[in-house]
Image (cartoon, rainbow over all chains, first blue to last red; front, side, top):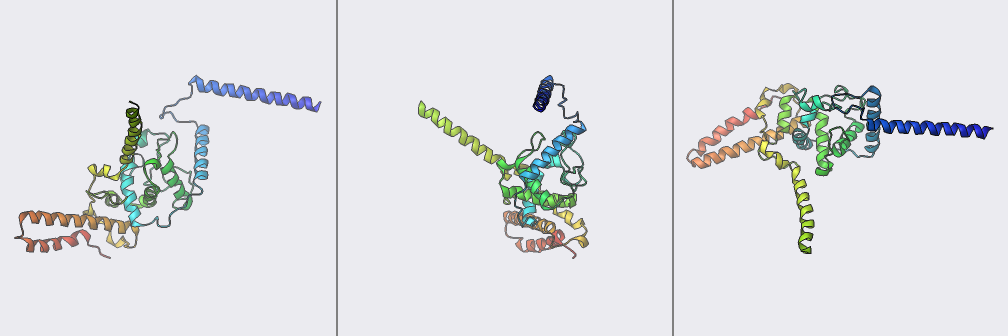
Length: 194
Length: 105
């Protein structure tokens, strides 16, 4: 009798799983889900995707070793010039509050001229400038994030060059537009930092 | 014929590899390179400047480089004109120096 009940319950679960799978695949093929970047996810989808992303990055970046000389002027100069060339379109610079990319990308790229708790992304919690946030930044710059507009810079940039950018990011929120200009200007023949 | 197609197989990936390596060379950005606006340092609040701060040190390094470049440029310009006014030049460049790098500490 008990085994009969178990069997029928197992059958029910199998049927339910089958129906769910068929419904899910049907939904995928229906084309009903809005894919435009200007049509935002519902809260549940956003939470699920954000949790997936943050858990994945936290796990993958866990073993990264942070260099001890991250707060050096040489790293700031080298990283600043690269940040200015490669990141400002999406992540802005002091004195700028928006760009076509910040308006159009979804999810919107964080404004890195603001500290983590001010740029509206709560993912790293209150971990500004601590090891976890630094490892996270390094990993994201190196590997990028799928379907977000953030490319992987690792294939064209060695680890030292990426650490230089991470070093610059630690000081970026406190820079004035004038300080930023001086630190990031490459000058006429300033290629020697890399 | 075989050798020719083999050379394509070798040359094409080598070319693509070379181009991808160049794609992120900092020299690529030299075309739009801006000079650092070191004159802006004069307007900054010098009482808040900490010379031990890496940001401050980085700015100083950048502006020292820019100043040396300016000096070299003016030396060359004077060299083109001839050596007749060389004596005056040193005086003038010494006058210029503090204006860019003066810091009240």
